[in-house]
Image (tube, rainbow, N blue to C red; front, side, top):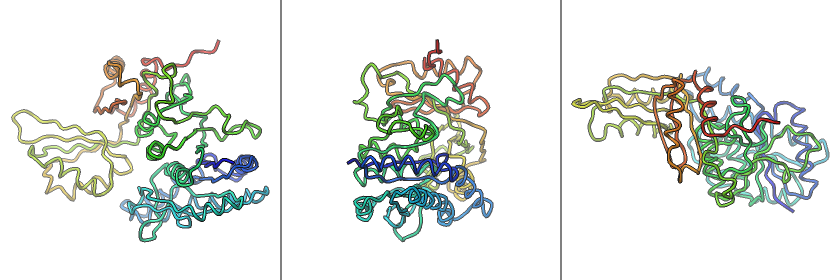
Length: 419
């Protein structure tokens, strides 16, 4: 008997017929003798609808009340899936985040999971019940509903898998694995059989939509084996442990034959660029900018400081998630006197393009190839950031697809044409 966590995304849960299809797939795993916990997302588009209500009510909404609203989407799908499973003879019950409970910190809208009490869950599984758990939500120290940030159901699934010591965590989505880039932009993108935790972590952090960043980091930390699969296969498709999805694994599990210089190209249009002009060029000035942003739990990505020779001031440019732009502007304006900047300029018409691969550690010229390729097509680079296995640039959003296509070809990632 194996313990399996199955996670289904929003497109998999988009309507009663699809929920019935998910129930049939879960039933097969249960009938194979496995103990099964299912983590579900809200129906496709439902979280966006609820977020829209919050923004319409107030652009500067209380994050605690925001969590109460947006957590409702997963509550609906968990109950519906439990009903659908019962209807086909599978013992099942739903468990809300506070019922297990899933303990988180109090960073509302971006909470982090601390611990999960699995005693009640273990008893339920031992009785032969399928546990249906709403992703994306937990319980703060003072008992309030929290949510984990967009895509947080992936993190919920990995955390549940770690807590219940599952043999495998299967992430079912609308794609059948991890590709070298978005196949909708590059039809010749290739599906990858294996990706390292580190590569997936970087890809997720720079725009790949397959898995949430924190879910991959948690999987790497807890050594949870994660498999990305499609939920849109036929009802009589092979069982999950034989399907050709993408396995997220430790680097040592990838052989030299399988290893590539570049694993993938990712893009992200959910970025906003902020420039503060005439910031005093003195010790502590930059800290005064980023301390209020950190206090507001706003993640800053690329940072550029331009110092003019002979000048007592500097311009500082950085990027934040576009959803956090309004709160970033508010926090900076409140701290304007302490920071001492001249003007705040923001731009949402930007996109981040990233190349990722563990092969960068042992090969030179990756960044040079990127810059040369983009320059040859007249694509201007507005900012650059790097890590050991990643190079990212900020460009105008209108040039996103062109940049992804030419880089995919430049790094030799295009699939061979069928004969």
